[in-house]
Image (tube, rainbow, N blue to C red; front, side, top):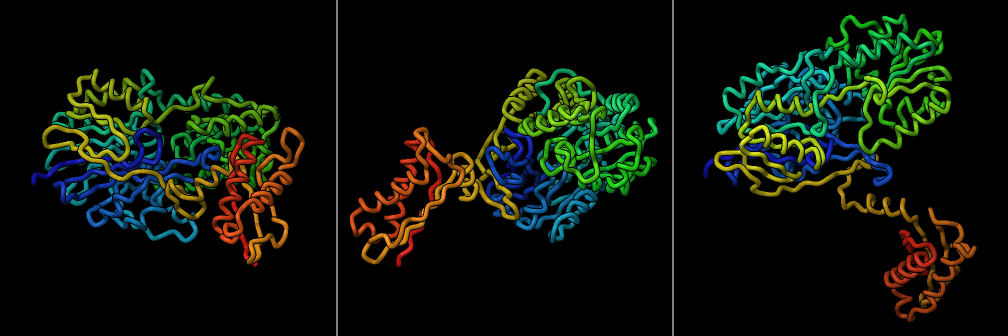
Length: 554
């Protein structure tokens, strides 16, 4: 049976975040697999209370573990490498990354409590490595973190360009611009497929340069009269350097606030990306500087409740305060789903008299992803036979597909997580469906989507919970009054009756109305009471709470 080259996304398609792609080489009975990225997305308290992180289901790779030749990282953003610490022990495959990504991952591991020992092989930027039957080339691209790379995956069947996250920025501040020359060479040699970032396909034109953002930040810091705070993604080293340069020009000290920011600053200095940048101060020095001589560089741009900015907005940070006349620069975009949390911080600071500047009125942030003209450039340079849009929601994928068709790409394939696509030889298309889904990190425990804890906590958040404890004699009689406890349920109904009394009455009447043999069956009794309680509360309230009934035989 002839060998095939296949591609399957297990995360990151139809959504932004949780990226995991796999490439397969071999026949239908025996394939070698190469994984690209292993990221997370973040829990939504409204819909997933208590869930910290969401990760891709890797059950297929666990099953194929002996055929998994390696995991290659495009860059060190959480949505591309944030799941490794939790999931690598199930895979135990070699990991390949460039210097900055490897160093940031090592620092992330050191910050964990009892992390597994995970070896990472460092690959030079622009280098090539053999991983099983795949030859993987790291092609530098501009993005919002150092050492982002597109991967040219060379095989005997053809070459695939997996773009990762990228943009075209001729003046990126940190690192080289996107390697147009090498991408054109790939196109000239014949590119089988391009698996491409779709995040900004709904936006016309081109993403502005980091250099333009740096100019705006410098102007805003220089013009400020009071304290200045800047919040941005901790991983954006170019933005950190821009803030440092702006502060030095305005004769201000930079105070780094937040563990994630301090970690990235340390790694960036160790790997040479902040060479020549002045030393930063720790938070305890903040109060020693006059208001016009300090800039606070803060984590928390996405409204994270435990991050520095939220604590500053709530006036409960031990060292950092912002007052009337001070200025906060939001040098970031709000990730969809975080609007409420970010809005609450902005509103809280505005009410305290702080001037809040966002990208709504000033060029204080640019995306690290390509807009439509940049996507057209990439297609013109590489001229792929196949285009597969990834890294985006349904609208982004659809727009990317339409753009590619208009640009003359011969074959455009849209897919969903779990679709196994044959790239070659012969006609490309979806040939199978692989297991895919989500894992939820709940504290220190990983749960699947069908987890009782996840489902029940969502129900409790919507409609509360009733706990009923019943003591029954051997004869099927109540040994004592039932114990009732209501959590998250209104105290009274519209008629003024307390729900405690309503539930107590329905429990007693239900027990007394059951035949004696059923009263002596603990499981049958508990189910009857549960149904009666939920039905009665729904009648008075319009919601059915979770109901837990414990029957004790005495």
